[in-house]
Image 1 (cartoon, helix red, strand yellow):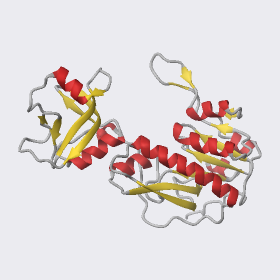
Image 2 (tube, one colour; image 1 turned 90 degrees about the vertical axis):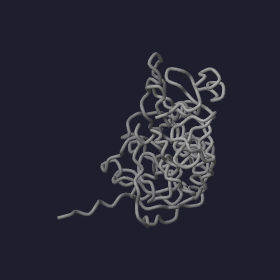
Image 3 (tube, one colour; image 1 turned 120 degrees about the vertical axis):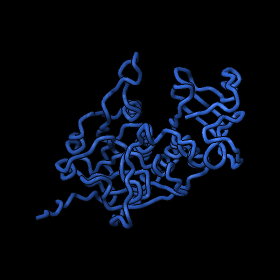
Length: 301
């Protein structure tokens, strides 16, 4: 026997006291826009400080740093979202699931970087780019216990250009989403509508997702490169391609073969722009090629 999910509290149409939860850089524009628009932000809940490098010190999350600059109260306990007597909480890339007990205590809105129900989950921007989507967007939805299933207040479409990287696309989505978040809170949220359509899921990219298969078309490999961290093997060592240009030129050589400053693929070639050999910093591909003096015909992969 199935039991219906409990009815969750709804935010007021124009909330003014707004708690915030978020952690990475992608969430900073929303926090900044809320503060600059004059909303009362009683608490900012964010991930705990963490060490960014092996020899470094624990550093606050980007959201914590932004909140500190604005003199806002910072917490690492999500229970504080309900304890601060807010009209609602806005959640942007917080990085932790919020349980039903907390959702039942305070209305929560989630700014999500996709056109729901397409790309529910942890890596919607990377998955949209890797799939070759021509458009993505940002949604404001009511947060539910189940993953990204809540009803949607609004959707804003954003085209994906042929030169967009995951970083540039996330930046555009986060800034345009932040602007529309504030507008909707000021003008009135209206009524959220159930999601329509077949859902797809955006699981985090694995190392295997980023491995270049040179038998794939150059356009597919280009998308892997623009997502970030695309890698292959060269002389038994991992080799990262940070930037490249897909070209429709064809060669008789097998996929993965180096031809001058480009690598042959299953359809077309990828000209190398920025590369990172194992144990070395990223470098312009031509400078690296001049130093490496690899013979034409060297195989990657």
